[in-house]
Amino acid sequence: MSSLNPDSPRPIDIRLHQASRLLEIKFDNNMECMLSCEFLRVYSPSAEVRGHGAGQETLQIGKEDVNITAIEPVGNYAVKLVFSDGHDTGLFSWDYLYELANNYQAMWQDYVTKLEMAGHQRKSVETQK
Image 1: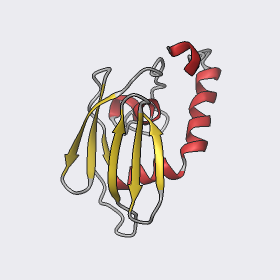
Image 2: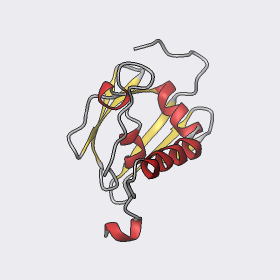
Image 3: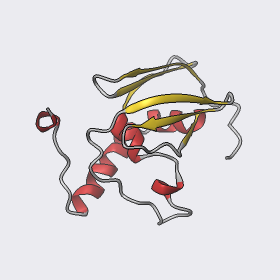
């Protein structure tokens, strides 16, 4: 795990909203965000998702209904998110959470585009109920 950037904002509050499958994060620079459990799952920093080098990423499919079942602190630099599909190997450092929050729109669009290019159609929110 790389060391944290001392200038990066740190989370001061992390709350899980299980009914809406959203993780609310407030950073010490007054930035607030709501990240979906699906987004966090498909961008998990684990080797299973990211691979062991550039170009080895594995596209995550069918994660629309995934939820977070536990949030476990890891030292004072990260959290381990335990997902309802059993995935629990990614450590989300404060720097990585801030990167996800800051780049949410572009990263989400990139994910949706990759799904479409692979011939997969995301279930819409309306069809999940």
